[in-house]
Amino acid sequence: MVEKTEEQTSEERETSMSKSSQLVLQISGAALFGALSLVVSAFTTEFVPRVPGWGIAIIDPVSIIWVMCFLVFGAKSGILCCLIGTLGLMPFDTSLPIVGPIMKFSATLSLIIVPILFLKLYRNEEGVRNSQKIKKPRNYVVYGIFGVILRIGVMLIANFLIFITVLAHVLPYVSLEFIGLPSISGWTAIIIGVIIINAVTSLWDLLVPYLIVFGAKIDQIFSVW
Image 1: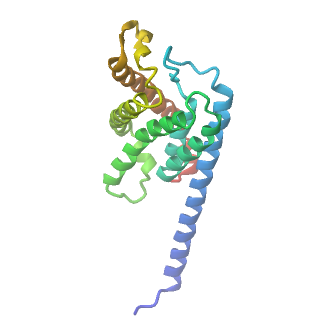
Image 2 (image 1 turned 90 degrees about the vertical axis):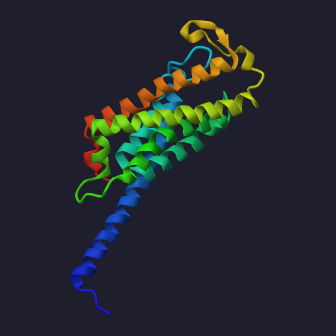
Image 3 (image 1 turned 180 degrees about the vertical axis):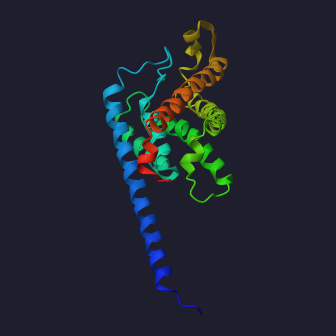
């Protein structure tokens, strides 16, 4: 057996400390952004523009903060932030208790899980962080398109389950009046509405965090992933 030199042992300690510090920073970032999303939600819920007749936020600051956490601190932190925010929102959601926050979690997670999976396919390059890869506009657009497609699919399934259970009594009254088509109602309205609404909200959920995080170079301040 070959004994480790003092230099090798020192390097391993530095690496271990580095990974340990990185994990602490990721958890701290998730907790901070998760708490921030709750505070922002408390002060903006009444003022956020919503889709008439549907009650869904057109621009959701909570989801934007969750995506920002992912871009700054990485996959683990992003997912943890979504979980913290979702659990924190549950006691305060009055429209659809528990269901509403879970829907928000599912929609946002769909957007960030796609780049996480795509980055797994990347060959590791020394000195190149994942945040640098996702920062490239072409990569971000591709990840975003697949993320939006996944989100729409997930939300179609989620809405189907909701409208055959807790909101079954509301189904006949759901329409596309918000785009000037009040005659289209029921399941047709739900399918079309879910696609349109999630496509638009996803645009804001992806664009705003990208401009803030990479425009202000917040990712370079932390350089976590």
